[in-house]
Image 1 (spheres, rainbow, N blue to C red):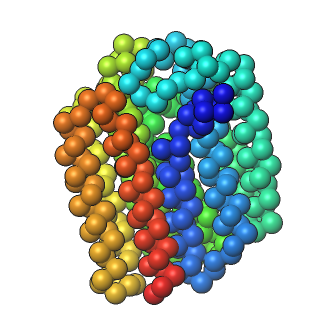
Image 2: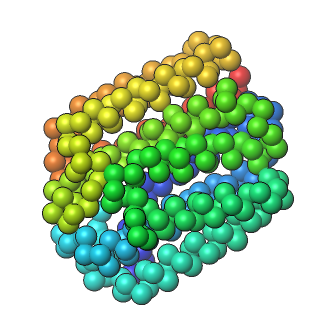
Length: 293
């Protein structure tokens, strides 16, 4: 039973939420405002929000009949009969409620106005796959990921540690955009794999709408644009040798893109995990860059 719940968390995708917090912390370190406790709270808040979203996605897709047994993607415990639907709904709401309580503690560093930000994050966790207009079913999943896994965690993780927005436009926002574009690529691989199932179920992901070829190219250019943004914000701030991290990312990104175009079905599962790990590795590189410079 524990195994099926761990599968429902989709551990391969969790580096996406971690990367945003790490990148935001790298910005905080550069600004001289690293603070251990809000960093740790932000990290767990981001991870739990993604787990709640993954649980909600599994539950609501099952209720709408969008999943089927034996799918090429991650095993769906509810669809396969391993997890009762009511248990998954309860877990979704329980994790989300605990995460909201955890997020309230950040008010100490960021102020009461963080409450609407937290509400927006909670609504996104559910609205990604639930509600009258689920974002993931109408080609808006990638935009939501850019905002809530890139811009929001990077900017607000930096803010709760530094207490100001002084470098938002010159540093944290472009870094957030870069991380968001990398995170969107994880979703593109997921939808690239599931395109036939999603089309049959009437789920209008970007891959269903625009086709595999177009979205594989979007995957490639997302990585390129992310690298351009990172070079733009770092090249004047750090020695040129630190650009090696971005160059390595770009090379591995190209290899993943090449393999993605020639893969089908479950062959894409490892690529999804590797896309997430690659952005996580780059966020660690940003931490090293700012901490060691």
